[in-house]
Length: 532
Image (tube, rainbow, N blue to C red):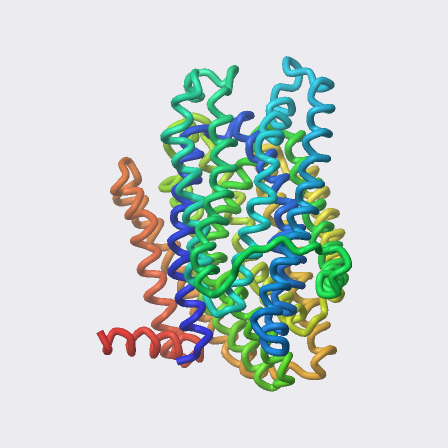
């Protein structure tokens, strides 16, 4: 049984919990605000602090910080390791505070120039953004805390931090919104209740960061202010961050531009695409992100010890497991997109808006990129572990231009009811380009990848995937013709009946054809069952 599967499996349990709660949160959001102009404004406003969160927190800073943190642990001892962590956190607080102050001043200046009567969606978006923007610092801190715990070998508790975030955000709809006056579902002309969700975002950021502190304290962490300017390790982390920051910034600016273009091209496009993204993030987060999070400190340790054969083997096994698991998820999301959306979202304001078909179309266009998005995360971490943040940056920037061109073209070409799908197709194609270029660059960097074992089961996987798709499609057709989806029980059956049959076919064929990942996961599962 590989340590990789066990560690990423533990993370997957925690991540599954948080992702399921995240899905519940999206269900509550969809019920509460639907997919109209108010929901569109909220989605756009929430996206912007996420841009800076990924820029300063989960992206370039984490990629530069974890290898340095891990190296200090091995070469200089724990005292220096914690000192580096405190200096990095101090620098983060200063940088994030400056960004927040500048952003709040800019939004306050811009608001009077936007006519609320003529442009209510834009005016509301700016008001919500002014409330939510400080969330950026909170989740940056949460991301650094997560990186520290991951580097110390803890994966379950950090992954559970997102659970607290989702609990607070759900509570903001259920408990806080009713205290904010007029019911949003009855009159969207005065969307006062939406500000309860914005306040909930801030509370969720506090909860996610604070949840990880007890585990850090048990490891020996005590925060102390350390002047970051002049600190050589902080300077090293900043130098390592710069290429990654450019790449992440380019990506986030690209997302902001394409989503902003969609924001002004039609009401509901942004939020409907976001609902599809949240659904795809469930399988991506459960295994893809869990695996990538495990791999960064693991690969960094192997690189530091110059064990490059083990580095290649670990990376190859990670990609093999990722492909095997995510291929089934891709098939199910594409074939069962409409029944899935109907089950999860079709109630309350969402049902009134009639958003099931456009969101299902967006999901079917986005889901084929699931394996590619996850592979890009894993391949980028291989470069970060080798101390190279420049190559992923260069590849990212090129692919962002590809995505920008494709998105702009598809948004113009696709009809209004299908523009959500334009965003999905463009993202999938650009992710494929990104994965291919990263693979070629990594092969050049490591001289060889030794991926013969990765290519050998591809035909068997393709056969299992096609069989799974056919079983899901036939099962869905039979269910709809014989039983339909008139109530909740039938909607559940319309998803899980075909999905269960499809999964059995996929795993059965993969085990029969001796796909290595299937055999290893089966052995791991049966051994645990036997012990119990």
